[in-house]
Length: 393
Image 1 (cartoon, helix red, strand yellow):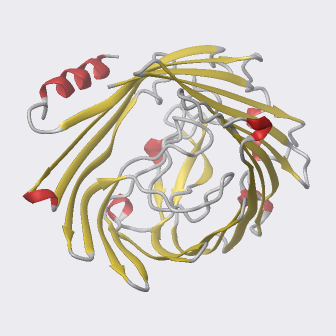
Image 2 (image 1 turned 30 degrees about the vertical axis):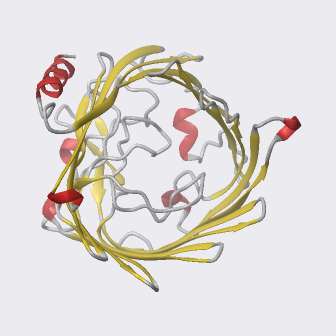
């Protein structure tokens, strides 16, 4: 909590005279419907987060800068109480070129249930189990626009380790991940410099991206080990890997077809994986202004079973509701089933603006029939309901 007060103080006195200041403060409450599976875990928890952002420009708009911070205070899980620089970036516009230097958060990909090609930023694992929250990544990024496409060149110095919930955290793996003992295949460790390239272009109704990445894998192997007290823990091991990815999105009438596929080479195992599906939108349902999108996606991973993770042979069925009202009410509901193990999970994310400055977000996650060999087995008793109330300024 003291960290949050410090960040608030700095935010109110810094840059206020020559930059646009925005952001949000959010109160999050989470409640689990079942008793905790592991000792020292909680059934209810309330946390506070703060995400300020500054934006400025000079040189007649050819140079811009931005800074976005994130901090969460959590009295139950010490590993979830953390601060991060999501963005600290200088952007220079030079004709057909855009130069970005600093820390940034960026996204590659098109599919809804799984983001295979998105390899630039590290996952902020203490923020949620869906992998949507990212840590800021130091980078030198050149984006070059040509008539035949857009090229992205990235140099990525300074690796960010994945964050994991602590012993009191929920949901978490059966063994605590000891990030203090993280190991690397490269002798350079966190100082290894990674590289990435991407080509993207729009061909009529088709958006196509082809990417290449070489460097430290953002997905650590979790190896058995012990801590200083002799307790069993998991130790993250970060391999070197090379990945080629393709993402494509085709819009045809009311249909959106999506594809992501990758080929990854690493010491532990080579990987070929894809996720493919569609979204069909029913516009103006029941003679209203509301739209409903029906989503279906299938994912496949050819690695050995012990390395596949959650999305190996999975079918995702979902629906997106956009009420198109003044409060920007949106609901996304999704059902994920493993077609081999029959493990099932269900998730609802709903958001609605309240008044002029508030936004309410509701999240429901359940698990059912989880197979003993499924990685989700650790979460089988972690059905939860989460409410987030955020004030935007």
